[in-house]
Amino acid sequence: MRYCAVSALIFGSVSIGERSEAVGGISPYGTFGGDTLKCVINTGDENYGRNGFRTGFNYELLREFGRHVGAKVEITLAENHCDYVDSLQSGVVDIMVLPDTCGHFGLELILSRKVDRAVWAVNSEDISKIKEVNTWIATFTESDEYKEIWMKYNRSINPLTRFDRNMISSKISPYDKLIKEYAGKLGWDWRMLAAVIYQESKFSINTVSHRGATGLMQVMPSTAEYYGISDLLDPEENIKAGTMHLARLQKMYSDEGMTDMERFKFVLASYNAGEGRIADCRNLAAARNLDNTRWDDILKVIPSMREESTLQEISLKFGKFNGTETMNYVENILNIYSAFCEICPA
View 1 (cartoon, rainbow, N blue to C red):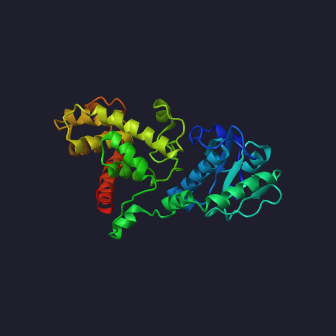
View 2: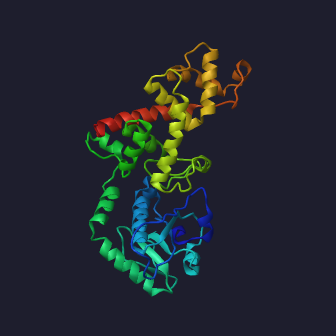
View 3: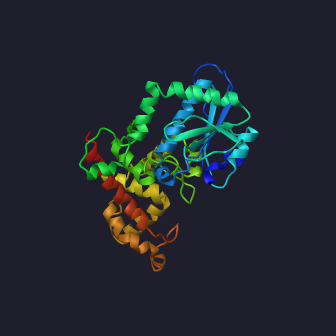
């Protein structure tokens, strides 16, 4: 049962991300009163974890509990093969969210009443903590705020399934409000940004690639650091980092004489492959007397970018490039955007 384990070292993990937020609310009181509430989310459900809705749901509940006790909240995603039980017992972790199917821990932990399909675990030596948790859960789950959060995540389904079923909706994801806000800063149709996020993570906040790209927009930790973002688990911080990078790429192509749609394609390609790789592709297109401001002409040269002979034809600053993923990436997002426009008419 790998989801029954936790290590204190996870709180130092940069690639996963750590939530540290001073939340407004009433003054600190009760058994959790203090400066910081350290929490770990481990849903232990691979199928559900891929769409990230259960993680997002519990993330918001922990933030609400943090407001209740007037503490800062540090929320971290669990890693495999880590002993979180020891961390709870030692006080390094205050609360661990587990699936309600995780079984019993004997005398090691005390589990709260169910919250949807999860339970919260606390140190078994402090009965007062579980009493406070259960009292809050009992009260909060009857509130309008809880109902709003529950509907936000549990009424969400694959938006492309809605497209296949010819369903019309005013909603695409649990993060539409944030997406609309940050798309506005880019000057984009919000459904364009939603399409990018869907392609990157399927709206899953807990997605981490083998290269370390994290969260909704699959932002690399180094990119986040460049833009002053420290918490890639936080949906807003992740979208902020991703859109700041998109804005920089968009500005880079602003004086190229491209149409808005052509610029959009180049921005997407650069977001996926890096602007240096796309600059190499554009230079090769120009060397072959193609229009390097048209994405269709770039598509003509990308297959050559992986060939050794191309290195004899032109200097490629970033070397050979297998651009199949990038070609598919741009096409997929355009198709998703088209589907989102059908699902959710402006």
